[in-house]
Image 1: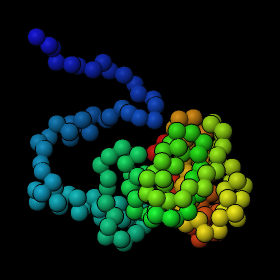
Image 2: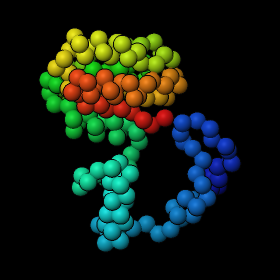
Image 3: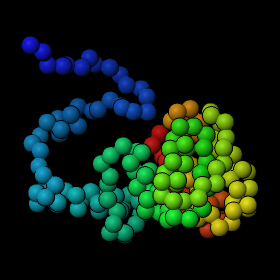
Image 4: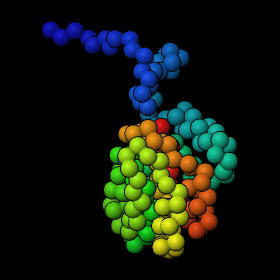
Length: 174
């Protein structure tokens, strides 16, 4: 006979998983309702309204994604990159590499800006990539590369993308 697994108490200090407050654990012990239940639909509408307020938008298509960060990243690529679109992808660790995979899967044309693992994205390299590819439609980068801890200057990189009329896909999980 197998005993129930009772995990040991740990203090989790990494980028994830993280410690869950007791009030959340208590909420998770409440009864489950289905996604078509009127109470769930009402709750989802409240959450969407709060997200619109938080992100300062009135877009009715604002909604939460219940999935890992990589699924959210993929959702951005499949909705913003069309076959043939040039995408400047900054790669300085594992998750920049995952962005590159997403560009390829969507049929986008990647323009890779590579920096050493552990180094932040070099804004001058991004500017040079835009100058060489002024038709690039998207800049994709990881703000804080989980695999190395390198933090890139999101404000500067975003401004460069705006300067060239490109959208920004930024992984902000860490």
